[in-house]
Length: 250
Image 1 (cartoon, rainbow, N blue to C red):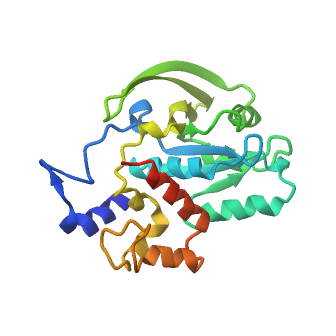
Image 2 (tube, one colour; image 1 turned 120 degrees about the horizontal axis):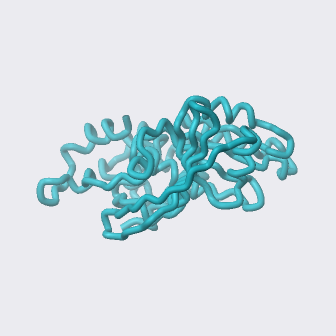
Image 3 (cartoon, helix red, strand yellow; image 1 turned 120 degrees about the vertical axis):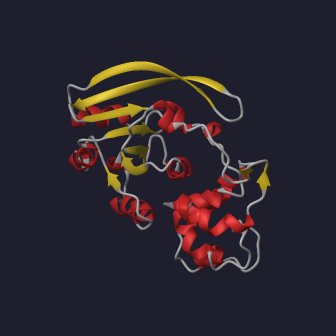
């Protein structure tokens, strides 16, 4: 697990606040609090209408890594792309670091059966902006989807209290999707800026070569992660996403 690797590497360098290490603070889980017994998180994004938001995909992946939930990425509306190769290029960024990716189109039927196989027999959280085609995909997979609506109250570590509407879609007796609209909000993250680097999984092996053990991979000298980006071993798009994400953290 990423968490185990982080614990081993940083144990000697942690700064304690009371009895709790600075980076490993007790957190209120979000995904697991809203829906227990999850097998995975399905992150749905669209290539167009609305435009693809890689930053949102990456932040949802961070949350999945944080809560140790498997993540699957669905890139929808492939029919709106002029160049089909563009879809494969974007998918490759995530496939190359170990995330399953399915490219779909409800219009052409592309990838719908593959997505159905990824979900079959599992309980999945469903995350993504409105308009990316989640409902259309559900209807394409199963025309008689059963929907149950409930509400769950949630308080994060910063004291913010929110009531979130949770929709549960039952595709068959063994397959459920739980739509958690609050997952698109960064406010639910409780990650210190010094910790974010541990949730971009492709950084971990290279980080061991950084000159400083507490390197944030931003402006530090002799940063092996930045060198890997320049060499094309880490996707520049993911690194830019990381830079932007860190600026939102305290």
